[in-house]
Length: 78
Length: 192
Image 1 (cartoon, each protein chain N blue to C red):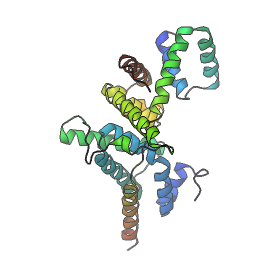
Image 2 (image 1 turned 30 degrees about the vertical axis):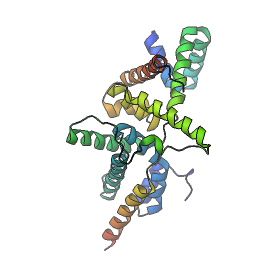
Image 3 (image 1 turned 180 degrees about the horizontal axis):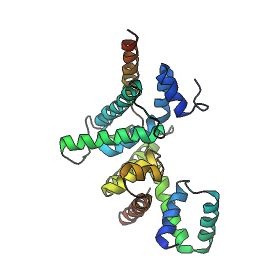
Image 4 (image 1 turned 45 degrees about the horizontal axis):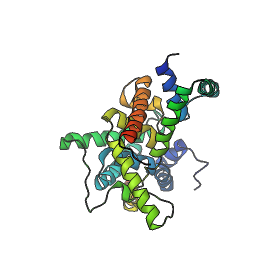
């Protein structure tokens, strides 16, 4: 497996898309390769930073959606 | 209606049978991911609210017309609709998104926080502003994959299908996005 594939698998690992066998392989590689470990740690830091950007729509928007659905339901019932 | 025991598939089926509460639960479950993704795409609060509404109106209309074919999971379908609406908007306005401050605030003014004192809130606001700028400086394809994977929480396989690239390309874009953001942090000596 080349370096690019290994790093791609690290990305999948960070986002919990790897299976148990792959997890074992990745952990083994991380334990043996300091550069890979460094790449992983750097990507993890950025990943955690991105976790801070979360927001919600206003209650008004949600109510508009729900009211639209209820209105359609009333029209269909007529 | 309890959230944790009902799948999206079941909620959609219940909604199509006339249960409005099922729609509300579906929205509650996914609104954060969908809205955050739209907002980072378009960078304008008011526009994001409009597109969020339009996304769910399209979803509702499709479900009510019986056109939903269960082609996949709900969230990738919803994100496809949201993404297309964002792209349509940019095509109509023929511009790339710029940050607007309708009334002097933007996305990071309405982010959810734990309860903090004023100083902690200010520090967090500054940090969020830096993160926002980092994401916005990424090349378009990398920014898109960050939004779709990290905020919309689609799998790389779903992202590859949605953006019509191979899974390795999607992974590569994410890899370079993370590397580029790390480089920007080092170059600008940003404290996060």
